[in-house]
Amino acid sequence: MTRLPSSPACERNRDPILAVLRKYFADRTHVLEIGSGTGQHAEYFAAALPHLHWQATERPEHLPDLRARLAAAGLSNAPEPLALDVNDDTWPAGRYDALFSANTLHIMSWPEVERLFAGIGGLLAGDARVVIYGPFNYGGRFTSGTNAAFDAWLKDQAPHRGIRGFESVDALARAAGFHLEADIAMPANNRCLAWSRQAAGAPA
Image (cartoon, rainbow, N blue to C red):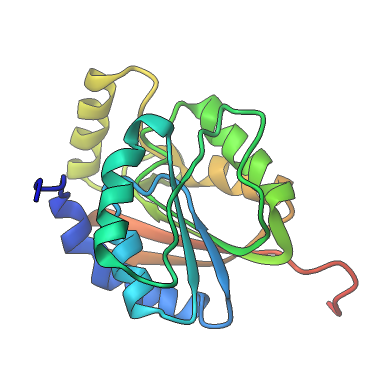
């Protein structure tokens, strides 16, 4: 069997993220993951949270390895991954009450981050919850020297990349109708941001 790509970062951060998801996705049923990468998170979280239907997605060129990993895992709640590029006009059909994404916002360009939040506004159910993991700046400042070095490395790889400011990302979430529920410190100077949206007609 061909050895599938593996991310050491996914192995390191999966348990701290899982602890967050156990709380914030406890009452969720259908999760859309944007930027599933190697599929390690999708495989691990779907196995650990069997009450969730975990829909992995990736850009078309990255689907083969992701598809192979999930097929090998054989999890009934982790179906075949779907193609999703935030630059496309058409996103996968379906109705999801949760969205998860890890280490994607600093890889996307800022216009792509904007398109991501604009797209989920109409895709997700009215009472949806969003959890995004990764590094963030606060007040225009890096939270650590390692994050500053990581940002410089990202920009060397591609000038459009970089660690995003929490305030700017939160503004996009609010524009899509979501309010911040939690900002959770994670290992290695990362954060888990959790937003939720109240269904229309629900009591305040």
